[in-house]
Image (cartoon, rainbow, N blue to C red):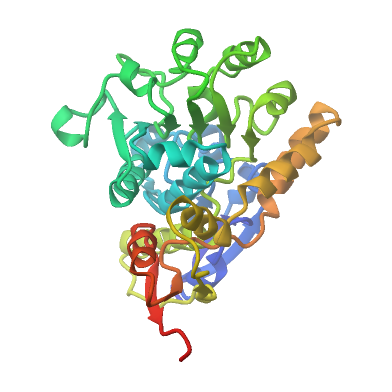
Length: 386
């Protein structure tokens, strides 16, 4: 054992298994983590609930910080660089989980899925790891899409579109990083004017950062019986949730779009690899403890949108996450609501991804295989009896 002293958020999955041969691991509550927890620590591993900056690390011996998230707006990377403290995050680890959340939201909202399969369009805001993964999944499923990301040159973006065209799409899915930086800040990117420009038939999904959508402007629009159908996984002011807004959205969840078990373990593994590289440690074997998901048998009669709905629901129920959030936060005080929001995240159940799942289909239904493979499934045919 190298003897590294590691503090990790207690909600990181697989951290003790992945890091047991690197050093000793102390698990802490990420929201309450303070400087007193870091007095004799080499490595700090956090999630998005922990702000890492000078006030936290100033008097600590921490030499490396990792966040088990794709985004890193909660990390003062400039200060880390000034102090020569190593840093890594987990880009793309939760990308497929968020994509499947978006698809589940679409499948759960009226006839939006049928409209997309009949020539409708998804407008994607942000072309990072998640935006690109969503675009690839749309392409595989034969769904039209356009992308808005002004920070990238057009030749680096698949199907670039101006924002006003994105807002006229059947679905607008937000995956931008949160920034106030000019010339294209994403903070309140979807404010009064942008939200008013969206059709009532449009489905707005935000699974990025709550502040990208002006929650007050959205609530005002919905209260007046206008605005798009809405699915929110992220909220301004988390862990507090604007309960009046929650009452009016189609679906709400507790910032768990990327919370698949597969994505969580992948993020921890990415950080393990970054730590071993930074400290020039030998490679170690996989020790995650995550077992393969059980295979699924596809009903023979399903096809098209019905097959997609069945497949998505077989691994994830977005409706249950909506029910849990409403039950935990409506009708209680703001303080109790905030605690409940964090508890939903902390105690989130074991959700497995559909992509990579082993599915068995009847050999008489080759179209099933094509559609399921477009979702990233591993499909095998089983002969019907007789």
